[in-house]
Amino acid sequence: MKAMAAAAKTIATMFKSPDTYSPTAFRDASEAIKRYSGTRLVADFATVTAVKGSEANELIAAERERFAQLSNDLERYAEGLADAASDSPGSMPNEMRMRMGEQVSGGPLAKRPRNESNRAAMSAEHTFHMMLETCTSCHARYRVRD
Image (cartoon, rainbow, N blue to C red; front, side, top):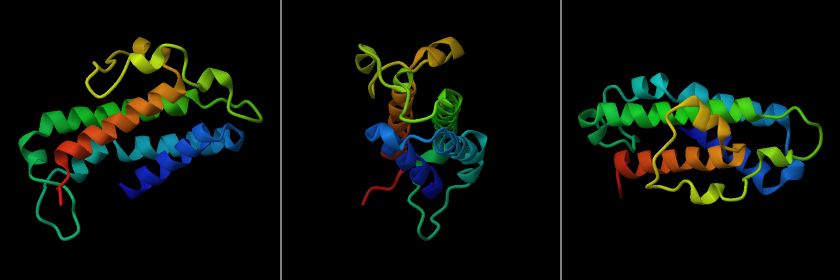
């Protein structure tokens, strides 16, 4: 989880400061998130126990299918980000940035695109926001609260 958080911070920095954009670093960070999500994340939480230091709650075991769907969504968004990494030199290309009207098409309660054409139509920045919302949804439901 720490590797995914670090990768997300790397990407967030590039969106906040487009002059820091590096196609290689953007792609590498996206690939790191992809590597730790999907079936690997599901396998990592296959047996949820009261392991010291774990912040996972027992609801993961009861809602395997829902947890797997969130993990698979995370993987798809990360893959979309990796695919969107532009090899353009210099600042982040405008086509990777949020487009007019895109920000109102999503949100925590919005339906998530399940097919490739919908995902491909999203800008990289919107895909990143949807990925972060997936992380937030999973943590809100499956993380132990203090």
